[in-house]
Length: 207
Ligand code: 1PX
Image 1 (cartoon, rainbow, N blue to C red):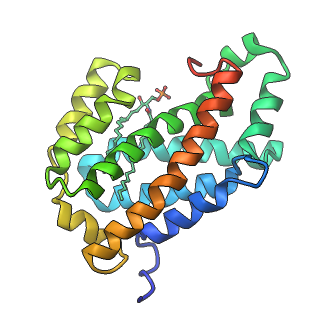
Image 2: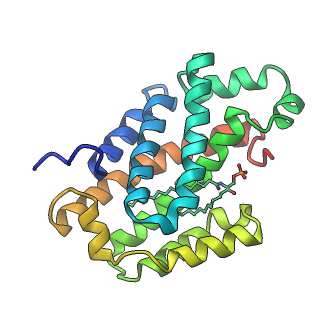
Image 3: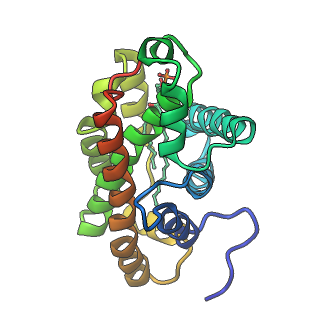
């Protein structure tokens, strides 16, 4: 397989990042987690300016988390939750820039991704419908009306299934579909561990 052009999206890279995330102790490592997100954001940016209000928000969140990781030396999601909770749950809830509330937003978006990729893999050619259904089953409940409206409008501009598979940069469509089949369980695993962690610490509704 030809190496993807510098800066171009490759689903393989994202798959590798999410694969590297989960340790034997079932911890989620932040470095590959954020690198997976960087890859996804590059993909979104390649889809055009209609989506820039989404990618800007995602970039802001990833950048904030990278800053926290550098300053506080968090390695895993588990250590971040532990350290941020050390000051007490009320203090954490009051922080608009905490790592936990920021990860929670990406975590909800990861559920969207999982559902959307499952839809793409299923062979349904209606990408906008797949995307809207995935959004309605995940992020929509957490967004105000105006964001929901803008997101649904942007989804109408999504490329076709063939174009999607092509821009994944992993070769012919069958290969892209096979790689989706490989990637989805890794993404699901990261999602599941995070969900359980946040649930246990009652962090699923951090404002
Ligand atoms: C091979 C296919 C890969 C597809 C990759 C697409 C990557 C998508 C990345 C989406 C990241 C979205 C993060 C959203 C985080 C969020 O919920 N932010 C909101 C709340 O934040 P706050 O700090 O205010 O509490 C914020 O209000 C968000 C605003 C922007 C709109 C968010 C719409 C999200 C739609 C997600 C679906 C993306 C569709 C991409 C089409 C491929």
